Length: 456
Image (cartoon, rainbow, N blue to C red; front, side, top):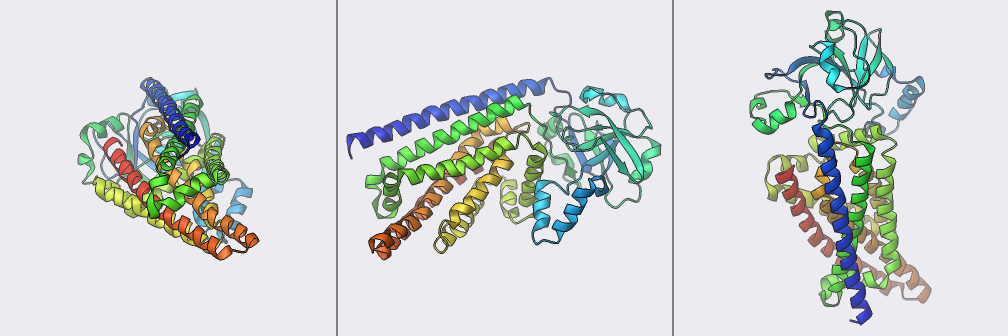
């Protein structure tokens, strides 16, 4: 190994360490600032159950129903009708939140109860068709069963659970809105509900046959979200530098299994750089763009949670709910390695050039939308989950690099008349990456399972 090569590898390790430290410092600073803001926020522990058979002590009963889709603009309704005719459009519409309507909550309490949560406007008058709106509620007025309601005030965005809701103080004149309505439900609102669960656990609710909560998160101030995003950028850059430095450091003694892909990292620095710029560029550009469309980001996150709760990734969600780290790690590894890496990235790329790169580009774009740090709790969670991000995403970048080597080698082989030999060498690089990816993603899976179960 040359002296210049050693200096490059040491430089990468030092740069990676510095960037990682700086990124984590920003994330801890953002989490500290978030905690300070939330400590001064009314109802920071608010919990809303929209489906429940019993009302716990200290909670206020409520009834709820989603707003009719007729409140959407006529052009949007027509677009929905047109898109419903297309295969797979239902999932896309749900993911973007177009069809997910705001929910009206009628809470059995006086209007004055909501004064601490008010950020603008005024309180509703009792018995009048006036409501308070969450930060992501779209309509200034809406109709429900022929009655028009007006938004007279807004609730603080940081209050958990109310972002996409309208709140109506209970009054007998409105009882008919929730009687004999198919989607109407009964539940409760508890101002200290989250703290209640943290102290007592879910034991008192285990007997509930039906219990569904609104997502207990609010929206962070843009300044904190921006600091968190910058921290994630630095952690991703630091993680990439550090991991590449380590891999290159041991490339010369990697052996037949890992040698082909590790040696290729040094042979094709421009292609490696291009994969990092392309994929991480898509990830963080989407994260930044999400600041302009927070409702779309909220809806995408809700869609992902539903996939883990009752969709094709339900087995992963169930594994984490058991609290068994080994079980959760193996489920994570299966999804990240067997499914995402081998099945959807490597295998298609053996037939269609750059197919895996396109797949990962779409995945990074969607992940950026879902992981954008706009919500309360994000900053604190990313102090440890950002390490998961850089461990897992770097493997996908390296896999994209490896599958790109194959068509590049074949192209040069066609020009030089030895494309068969180059094709075989390209396949060896991909096979080597498959082994390396298994090792790295297994480490990442155990780290993710351990931190999410113990800390979250």
